[in-house]
Length: 355
Image (cartoon, rainbow, N blue to C red; front, side, top):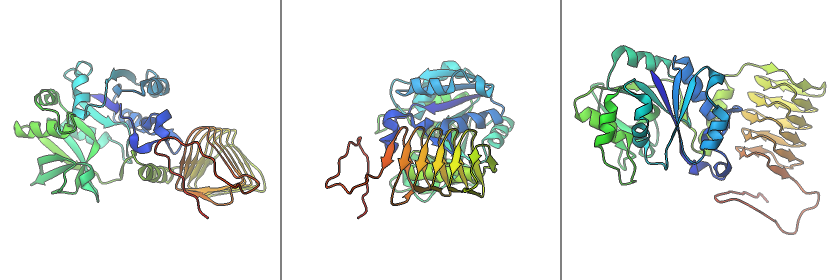
């Protein structure tokens, strides 16, 4: 069985972070989201993985390489523009051949992995197997309608959903799907929708099995979902302290401190992770915080946030919460209150100032 990971999206909902970084490489618990998908495939016994890439392909190629770090063989499949999930399947035909395959959206996370679903698919051999999860806002997703335990109909982002079962970003297909993706027409979004391709399988009388996931699933395309995924992953970590912690500091709960990190006169309260060579000085790092490599935090309080490599935060009078801070960012408080604010902000930035 082969794997197909889709990593061609532009990540507009995570701008401005994704102006300079592929959304699939934004870290959750200090590991790029894309890596969790690769690890899930490895755990399921998959050793050949195709990665569909777009505008950010250079960055993804640099991060993943040839796959040898995971013991897999990776081949990159270029998509000229985001033309829909079914289009990604279509252009992967030569790579997949007649093998069954798992298609995994590169910005998704499943806490229990995909091995049980792969085993079930290989045992039962339906034309397709779809993973479903109950969501409060089904109009934002592809939605499945079931009848007597079988998939009756699929609708992409329905205005009036008839079900709360959303398609999770993991699909298992036999080679029959290639005929279906060739038969369908672009949607009103001018994309080839995977829901239409699966519906074509159903209409042709082929078996499409549903599987409702019993663990959590996260699409990390939005800030709040990224932070929630970070929280959920951090809760699974075991305490490990390999950096330097001075006698005036306290490390409380499930905290990972990577080698060469330095904690001075600070409190780090887990679950949290502090990356290699980070420096936390006279500060408080609260629960559900992921501090990446080479970050410096001084005289500051932060919690429920993600801070990317090389950033420096110091001398803030108020606590940072619920934030995603990019690479090499500097945040600091000037010693004298300014008479005016000066900003240089990217598109879709958001700044909140509390008086």
